[in-house]
Image: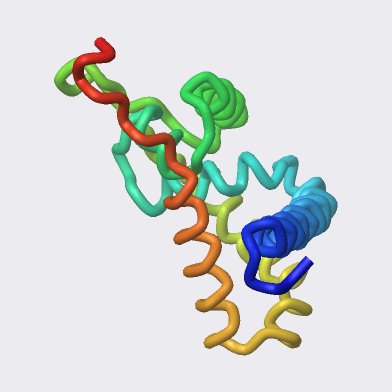
Amino acid sequence: MALGTPAAATAETIAAIEQVRRLARRANAAMDGELEELGLTSAQFFFLEAVAAAPREHIAEIARETRTSRQAADRLARQLVRGDLIELMPLDLGVRGLNLTDVGHRRIRLAREAVASVLAPIDDVLDERERTALARSAERAAVALRPRPRPWWFG
């Protein structure tokens, strides 16, 4: 198979996707192990980070931000409310926003420290330019795979 042919490009793309998946699995497993002491999972950590970055945002927007389903985001929000890490804000135009509680602020600070120690080996092997390029490449690839809107006449 000649390099540059569609089949070769597809094989290279599949190999690249597998490498990204492997990295994500290893990072999540390492984070889960470290966050377990704090009573968090990596999914809960990413959800808390999204709430911290956008206080008063509603669950659907947090779901979009974290690229999870609305149902998964709702389940995470309920778990974190039960753990007193986030609170549901009063209704505003029919939606309830989320906010970190004092306990949530303390826990996210500790979680960030734990995650930083787990991910430090990546910082050791990839410089800032390489990490930025990796993130940008992954984002461009994700955008390329977004479902195209159906034409209006398919109603």
